[in-house]
Image (cartoon, rainbow, N blue to C red; front, side, top):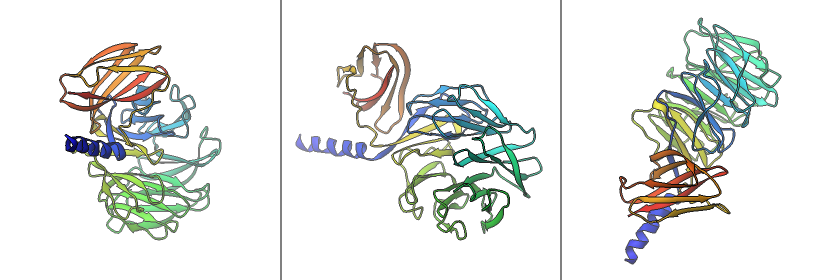
Length: 388
């Protein structure tokens, strides 16, 4: 008996202390092309048909605003963000409830946007002639002015990133360009020798930057003069939290580095052979989100599985352990939604409610440990239950 108890403790300790990816329900089936989280719990994603959804608790998603002709989103705060695509640039200041057209062009498709400082923003797009156009805003994105163009022979969606108000980069195809005068002039500073496509660029400081591309992740520590190719073939998206620690998507999986991209380790629970992960964002070191094809979306949470302290909330789950039937009672608050996950983070049940007392029947599930994510009127809590 003592050996059995010791084994259970070891297994649970490993689960509680390691970061885990858990599956969230988008209730969509298309390609989720972009995800943006201004805080750990408040975030947005968009589908390739212009549908935008929002979460305020990092778990459950709701539709916001009208369907827009966009493919990408970028949020600066909980309420202020931008959506862009074939329809131009749209801005919201009320958390996606309503959007205003701040830039409209019938032939230009906007693919990326960034704000290196308060009020100053840059956007990049392409037209039918394969010309890349760079736009600048000096009024927090309320209006945009064309400042430069670069002709390309062939292209994929260009990505733009500024390390400060004057120093910026854009990447497309196998080419990387740099400006030092606020986007007025651009110089080609690097060409991928194997002509692999660049997909996303991220600069953490004026000298330190990363690119996710077809041949791997590239890194510079001298402002782009020299780039080293790290491992991780066919990288699609990247989110570095620091110069050494971050995540990237590649080959249907998510990978983590803790040494600046020199080596990448497969991040468990985030592989799906039928899903190409298109966008990844870590608002902090311990919490991140990834989305992709087939409406797939996952959340990374270091220490996932540790139960939340309900504090003064009278939340009761009984009997626990049980044969799979549980009574959940919350005096004084309405239970709005409940999501059941197994120990790997897979969603087993996800239902909406409107009552202070509910019964859930999990007898169809195998015996084991499960986690209940419960949304109340004034908070969200995770509780562990055991099916015998």
